Length: 191
Image 1 (cartoon, rainbow, N blue to C red):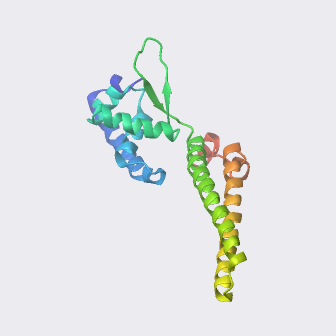
Image 2 (image 1 turned 135 degrees about the vertical axis):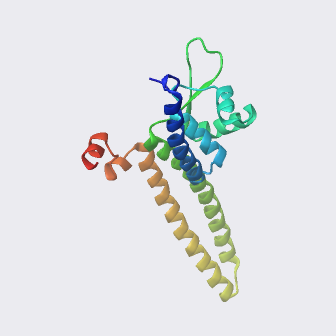
Image 3 (image 1 turned 120 degrees about the horizontal axis):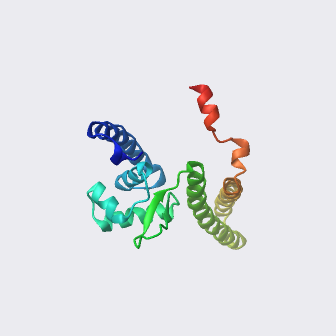
């Protein structure tokens, strides 16, 4: 049964309930660096009965095709939606990635990996520059400050290497050995 098969009063009640969830999703998408409107777009796709085109999303959300395209591109980059193929359709169709565990690991792995790599490059380059300054420094106070800075950066490098290993654990799925996913049968027992 789809939304269109419901009576008007049932549709109204369902929309009211769905709107609450869509609003919550939209507000919380800032965790992913996503705008409120893109979060609402994700919420719309979350409840969609079938994959949607940009035109359908624009009509539903009363937004331009350009805005929809930008939002979908953001969600595609974050691997939160997928482009799907449907026989007979010449337009691109999109649907939500329903595996939220995978969405979480993909998002944080993508974002953190970039940050770790960028920070490690800066730290290593700066440590090398600091080592050169230490070789030439004659003033003891200056040498001491350089050594303290170098130590701080060396500790930061250790952290970034640990974070890199943590990202590996996310990407490999080993995280779920340490913190298992919830399963529907477990949820049923708790409620």
